[in-house]
Amino acid sequence: GQATETVTNGEPIRTYTWTTVYADKRSVKRSERASFQNIGVKPELVFTIRACEFSDHEKVRYNGKDYFIQSTYEMGDLLELTVTTTVA
Image 1 (cartoon, rainbow, N blue to C red):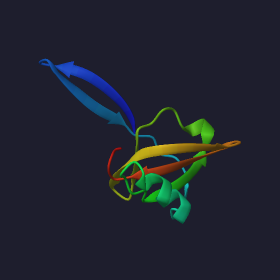
Image 2 (cartoon, rainbow, N blue to C red; image 1 turned 90 degrees about the vertical axis):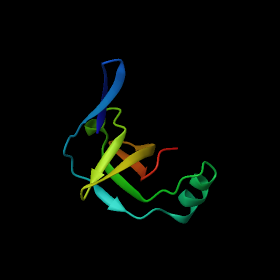
Image 3 (tube, rainbow, N blue to C red; image 1 turned 60 degrees about the vertical axis):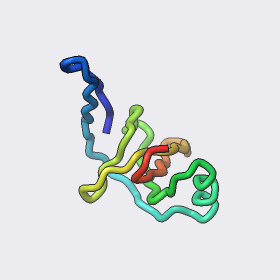
Image 4 (cartoon, rainbow, N blue to C red; image 1 turned 30 degrees about the vertical axis):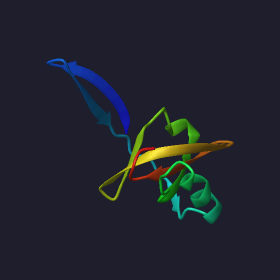
């Protein structure tokens, strides 16, 4: 989801615009888990998408559950997204 923030009655309101993309899902590698433990979060899934379909999104929604994008890794035309249920 791509975030948009507005102010209503002096309070910031963040809303998300969701885009449907096709992705390959895989488990998190042991080495990735270890590196994320240093910042106190547990990576849960990794998605690979086409890089042209990504535009500074903050979240991913998969099977009705929202995940925060913790890191991206560019691989040519593809982009790997590592996601968690908590924000770092």
